[in-house]
Length: 229
Image (tube, rainbow, N blue to C red; front, side):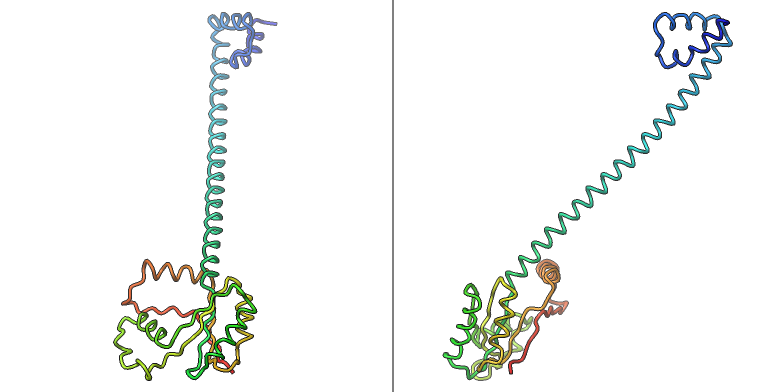
């Protein structure tokens, strides 16, 4: 076998730097004197660099895709956490405000009011019951209007707004039972119950607190009124 054949067989190992010191020295000495083998070695070296560049580009693409995938996972995780937090806040806010308002006839007696309260307590001992007088209702309506003077003349005997019992409870099912139990009792004019999606309620309150302008004339109505028999 010619020396060139031996060297050419060793050129790939020489280029990869895997030859032992003796073989490496043998190839280097031959390349100093043989232009043919030197040219072959240059071609091998150029091909190796091209292959390395292709591998580097491929690895960069894989790394870039991996980073993009990880970024998407992180963003989705953050969105899930935000959605969960919004849900928790929305339902806590909803349950804190969940309640019914029992509007009373003007001629209702104190005994009839106590009978209504007893039924409410029997169903939910933790229910919070607040009596709202006709005057309280009038003042509340004035506060809701941009021009409170519109209600001038409705004081005293001219007050058209009914007294009511506001019932708050953290148990929606108990509120429904209370409503069904007291509906139709003597002295009750109507019952109003909150009927709104917890998310709608939360975003409506955020809008009113931070973005609402009275000049817009927006009224958010989330009550469902049931007339008493």
